[in-house]
Image 1 (cartoon, rainbow over the protein chains, first blue to last red):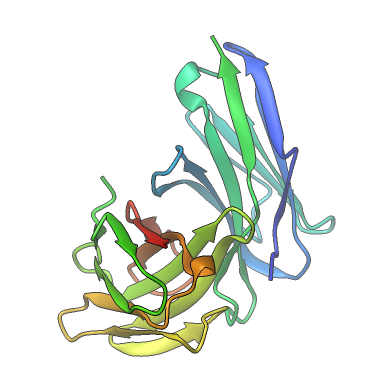
Image 2: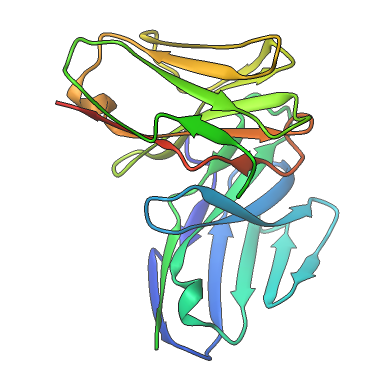
Length: 112
Length: 113
């Protein structure tokens, strides 16, 4: 079952602009993670935010989590061409029986 | 480089056949996960092993099976292959179970013809 749903499905912006992607999920979670995938490659872990955290930063990445709305956002500031990739949120539902569940991803294109 | 190694990288086989995908987790990681990624289904969790024991099961078909060996490497066996099994199969590992960062391999591309 698809727990997380990213929005938008695709996003195209100019280099240097900020990119914001959103993720909504359905059930209570232990934590939420964001991953990046370059075309046909493995997923690269970006950041993990626990259910008791509201915001987390890592370099040009900023992740927020609103458990009351069951949503998260990933902000990439000062985007670069190399940020072009698909971005997935993944949730670790309480109980963990369903594994780490991924959304369908947001495809981000950074125009040089 | 995540430290997770998967072989083979690419595999083309005929319907009805059986294949085995192999995964070596990051050094020291006890948990191994298998995921299937296809265009229509997205990333689907198949199964998780922890220190040799099955820990969690997802959308894994009965034609598929997996195991984790004492040296912690894992194999995913896919049998009676169908065209719809064509996908990218990922192995991932983590130090413990879910709740920790999971590191993905580069995947094994399976094409069933």
